[in-house]
Image 1: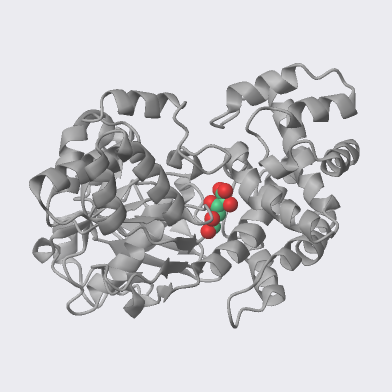
Image 2 (image 1 turned 90 degrees about the vertical axis):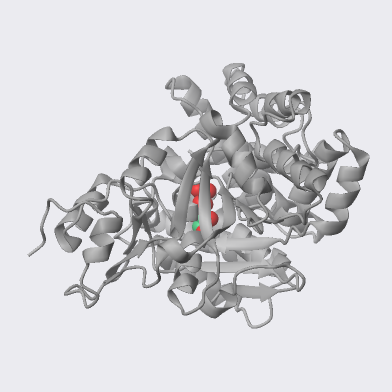
Length: 484
Ligand code: CS2
């Protein structure tokens, strides 16, 4: 019988029966004390803990997994640090799918907080034992403008450029730690970005170089020549942890874990192959290394994330809260199928062997997973950085190929309505450009044409090729009238 007083921690792990009565739970099979930290991860959110940390865990569980323990860095979340420290940084990853299964993850050995321990974070990044710095800092964490370059007008970047030894942003941290290694005469670490941005490695590299150039030209040249920034594609639906998952773990596994994560069964990680990069042998646990990340990225960002954003805005306007609820609406599902078949798939050149029709249907089936409550409000966050990648990019491709894009325009229109509704109902809009977006909709005059035109003329919102594009404007104006 489960004993409810047990707390997940190292002592618990030492005493756990290797042949657990519960076949669905796996514990670390390696000795955590013998593993050095080789990876610093910036952005210790649920996604990292359910994805990259789990692939690393699976590798460590094989014999001779290597010194690839992780130092997880959160920017502000001291509560998570406290929770994890109580558990010796162990936590459970719960797979909520057709069948439940659980993995206790030991790969994270240390948790640091930038806000209170920035020098410790830098020390760990600058240590010669750190071979890789990976990131999940969300799209906005890359501090890019709509042209994909470092946005030097952002307050965080302005501040970090002024006080580079005391950084607050991911870009500032990377440059400062690389500078320390450069001055020490050490080899650099390599950088693996894991956020939903096309060309994430190259974009991050260019932002880092732009920042570094302002510190020292030699540093910038050294980074340019010696630091690898592979592009990657990551995929696994990981909603915020629900209290029910904590209860489920208590009930099924018999221990208390106050910081578990939950995700679906599906998990994929594609990384650009950089042969000279020292890294874990993740390919042994299913990670794909390829020189064609771009086509995986396009397929995933435009189909999965593109449909997600469509659901997030259209679904909430119709009063739904979760992906599962919205996809269960027949009209919405039919809209998504039409959208993906006619306006998204034609814009993608798939990687060899990937059938985009089947891929899209498998994604819709993943949305239909009733075990996962993925809140539309979570996906709706940060539209100003997601919509350009997920919706405007396929619109641009369709325009160049003279194809229709009316359903994609509907997504843009739903986004504008969503912002307007947030303003009317006095709801917080989570978006790096929240202020601009809210002031734009605050000036709406209930004249649809004018309102849409003034919204879309916000500086830096649209890629250059869509600014002043009459047919695009007309298409969104038409959709804006129809969407509600
Ligand atoms: C979602 C993603 O919140 C969002 O924007 O579209 O987090 C999505 O769940 C993941 O990319 C799935 O891999």
